[in-house]
Every structure is written in C-alpha cells, then in structure tokens.
Length: 322
Length: 261
Image (spheres, one colour):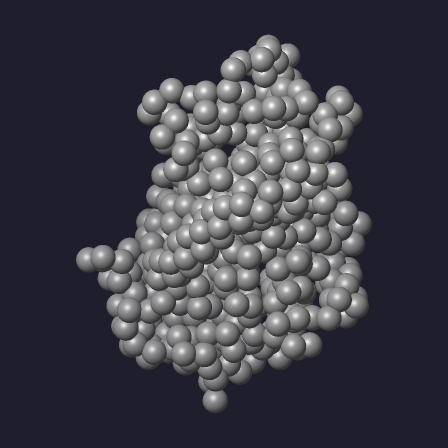
C-alpha cells in the first residue's frame, strides 16, 4: 500500500483553482520531492495532506487513512515541519519538544526522554534551555524537524525545509533527512531548489500552476530531455577542425561561442577517451573538457517553458526590502 | 491513557504555555496588572470623597468599593490579551503545529481559555492582596474572598472565549488589539467604577442591562457587605451566558478557520 495516495485532488479558493486535480503515489520508505516555483500549489497540497486544509475535490490518503474521513488517524501517523518553522520564539527548545510530545500523546516520562534524545540528535542539547527566538535559522529548522519526529511518524512532511538557510545548514538538514529515510521513514519534501530534489528524492513530481507537469525518478526525468554532452574548450580557430574530428562520435550541438564544441554523447563518461583520442589524432589542443548532464532545470524548462531558477530569482527580488 | 485524560493533559500543557507566554511578553502582562493598578491608585486617591455622595452604597472605603471594578478591568484585559496571544499564534503559524496534532481541535481553544482563566485568578488575588495591604476589609470573610476569586476566574474564561473567537475568525492580532478601547467602553458602561444609582441617563439604563454589571455586583457584594444569593446567582447566570456565547462563537470560528485554511 502506498504511504501517500492522491487522486484528482483539488483545492479552490473562490474562483482560483490552486491545485487542479493532481495524482500522486508515494511508496513506503521513499523520499518524494515535490518541486515547483512559489505559488505553484506545493504548500496547498501539503496542507491538504496534513489535514490542515480541506480539499474541494478528489481524494487523498496518508498512511492508509483518508485525510478527510480519518483525519485524526492521519495526524497520528505523520510528522509535519511547515514552511518557515512555526515556532514560538518565547519558548525554550526543550519546552517546545516536550509540548510536542504531549500533543502526540506520549506519557510524560517517555516524552521527556524522547525530547532529550531528539535535542541531542539534532545538536541542540546545549541550546535547549535558550528561548527559540535566540536561535539561528538553521537551529530553528533543526528544532522544527526534531519536533516533527517526537512520535516517530511513518510519514514525514517537510515543506521547504531549507529555504533561506546557508549551505552548511542546508547540508545538515539533508543529512538528517537521509538518515531518517534510512530508518524507514517516508518523506514528502517540497522544495524550490533543484539541487535539493536531485540530491534527496527517489521520485520527483514537478508542479506548475496547480498541475503536475512531470513525475519520475530524477534520472528518468533528465533522460527524457536529452543525453549528456561534452563541452570542449578548444580555442578560437580550432572549432571547425575539432568538429570534423568529432563527427561520427556523437551529435554536434549548436555552438555557444567561437571557442567551444558541444558534442552530445550516448554513453556519457565512457565516450570521453574516444573523443580525446580523435582530437589528439587531429592535432587539436583541448584546453578543457567537461561532461555536462541534463539537470532538473532542463526538465523544468522542457515541461513549463521557463527556468525555475529565474522564478526563484524573481521571487527573491520581490521579497527584497526596498 | 484514556482519551479524556490525554485531552486534559493537552489542555493543561497549552494552558501552562499560555501563562508563560503572557508573563514573558511584557505587552501582554502589563495591561492586566500595571494599567488597572495605576487606575485604582489614581481613582482611589482622586475620587475617594465620592463615598460621601448621597446614594453611594455603604462601604468601608472607596478602595473597598473599587476592588471589584479593578478585578473586572484586569479580567477583561486578560481576556483581550489572551485573544491577542492566540491571534499571534495564528499569524506565526504556531496553531498549525497544534492543528496537525492528533488531539481534539477544540482542546486548543480550551487550553488557551485555561491560561486566560489562570490569569483572571492571578488578577483577583493581586487586587485582593492590594486591598488587604491598604486596609480594605473583605466583609464576607474568607468565603466571600473565595467567591470573588471564583467569579473573576470564571469571568476571565468567559471573556477569553469571546477573544478566542475573534482571534480565530480574524487571524489578526491587530484586530483583537483594536478591541482594547471597546473593552474599556463596555466596562465603563457598567457599575464597575461607579454606583449605578448615581449614574445619569442613558448610562444608567445601559449599565442596568450590561451583563458586566451583574458580574461586578456579584464580585463586589462579598467584599463590601457579605455573600448575597441574589447577586451571586445573577453573576453566575451572566457568566454562564457569556461562556456559552464565547464557546459557540469559538467553535464556529474554529470550523471556519479549518475550512479556509
């Protein structure tokens, strides 16, 4: 039985259809990356799956329970870390985890023990008596993650868990997510970071304007949009000669500039020796050679017609104070 | 652990958090204690001769008369502060953490109300202590003091219910904070700070039907003359009415919030 099963799920806000009949199946023990720009419908979907928002159409079940008819059973089975960690800045870290343990119905003694263990696990034992308002962004996210794990949930929902974090904090969260997944926890992860989805997810769903436009493993999705290509820097005047040497070794792509040759190869890195030998035999000096693989951004562009990174930049610019 | 016991633990934990939150945020605790205490000091010092007015109820001192009004003011502001704190929780997404937990969702409201009731209790004790320190006598003795404390505590829960409903419906701390002047207007249009018999129209008629007047008289009687069944029952009825209204409005607002997300 899938850990998460969604069929024709919809959510309307007045006239606006924020989520437009999506279908998702997430297997037990999988990390599912839900990728899309701001406003695509990621958070609305997560709020429906975590019983915080009623769907206006379709069905969804989490851990085998219907999100509408068996909402309380769903809430017993899931851990939730929502976008922009919903933490009370006036509570201490320990108070928050203990409150979460009470909310999840853990007996006081085991709740205290579990809270202390989780604070240790996320590296916050020393800061446990400090108020959350004094924590850095990374510490707050780790605390939020710890709170979501207090009852050892079967399914963990992480809504943009690393947005706004520095690279080090981001990597720490990734490691924790991988470790949880290794322990058997199913993870539903929304993100607007391509690298995050690529690094963590077993399967990726790309959502745009409330619809899922692509779904599959990162490798399969990237495979759909093209093969890897070699980018050879040969210097001005050598491009034509290099292209002649490479003809027959792969498909030549339109050049970026007058110094590089772009050659699509069938077998990726395995084709590099043949290309290097051919160029050497033709007397072409290669300044640098890079194997470029399709990215999830290429997939995103192929499916939506625009770059996710551009969207992020635009969103970031909009969010910047004047 | 049974469902009921588990829910009681959740209500207690959320109530305790609510109290801590109030004491850690000066802007929440100061209106409950500092403002009514200052007003009590100013009124007692400046208008103490009011007890000589013909028609003023027989009291030991103006301070003794004012204690019930100050407790009512602190209780009303505790309800308002509880509503503000609840709205802040909604604004910062903390209530999502609570809504995503496997607990009866009304326990979240009850937890908040438990905290507000505890602040009402604290306010009642504070003003009784001030009264006793500055020479006011509690004519109803210990039972009278306990009755006043119980009525103020229950009133805080009742008024907190209205505050919680507005917080849930609006989701905005500014909206709840904007009710602060209204709280004072409603209170001043009761017999909290001045005997109803000495008011002029239309304030007198408004005060006569203002439910807060019934509560304040129920609190005042055990302080200035002793426990009186009629006043007590009227106060209990007024509190019960406001509790029911607050709980119904809160339940409806909660349903609305869950529907719209």
